[in-house]
Amino acid sequence: MKVILATDAGQPGGVGRHLTDLARGLRKLDAEVSFAAPAGSAIERTAAEAGVRFVPFSHGLAPADIFHLHLANTYDRRSVAVLARARRASRRVVVTEHLPRSNASDPALTPDRRTVGAYTAKTCFKRLQLGLADSVIAVSRESRHFLLSRYGLSPDRVRTILNGVDIGHFVPGPARAGKGVPTVLAVGSLIWQKGHDVLIRAAGLAQRDWNVVIAGAGPQHGPLARLADLLVPGRVRFLGWHEDVRALMREASVVCMPSRWESFAYVPVEAMALGRPVVASRVDGVNEYICHGSNGLLVEPEDPAALAAAIERLLGNPARTAELAWAGRRDVGKLSLDRMVEQTYTHYRSLR
Image (cartoon, rainbow, N blue to C red):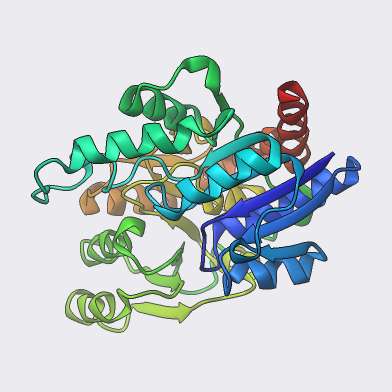
């Protein structure tokens, strides 16, 4: 089976990591895999590191049994032309929506005033775009529900396949309790979606001593640093882009994901696999693997007070926190990489 894994993603992140994991798994199942993306995309480097052939969109699309486009930007206008070419070159076309719900697609997520007619135009665009695919994959059940309700897709065309991680690569470390001032780690691009400002505001409401460490880069570094200096001077460290996130997680007292929206976030899954306690926003996908009070804690987005209370609930009860962390490590086994790859491969074969 010849498979082209394509994406519109230009920067390093979860989509590139997803493609790499999927490519390695599919090749073990004897699929012939190549990558396609815009010229100059970070995916070109990802392909080289994974030993996968890379072809820029501008060079045309080779014939394939499956052309699988992974959308990082749900409204990428280039995708329509790419999908139209893929329909001519490939037997079947699949689209994975990695972030269908955002402030661009769901007006309820921001109070900003919208351009008149934008909602209708975006709906028409998505119906055209996804109409070019034989099948659409959502990476969480809530994302699937959003796609069905927002764009009126037929349920039999949208399949849910949860993301997966290679659990064997995540070896739990010892508990950090008693090693100085507790640290709360957040990992993610410095953009509004990720809610780092909410975590900083939560730190400003702290009833006990704890510091914040943020690993990631992005356009909001300046505003976030100024907010930290104003509310919690000396208690927030910005590490920039960091290659070894697992080492950071092992050193953290709590791993926090304060996002305003997600579809399926890798950070909490990886933290749970490492046996670290997790506090996360209750956003799409997360409550499909975090059960509040059982293997982690969930709070509503945009609520610094609730976030601070949840973090301090963990920091104030080491024995209970260890129980939650152990349960997270146990439960995250259902999100294995092998399961994700096998379900995707089986789905490909069902379309042939």
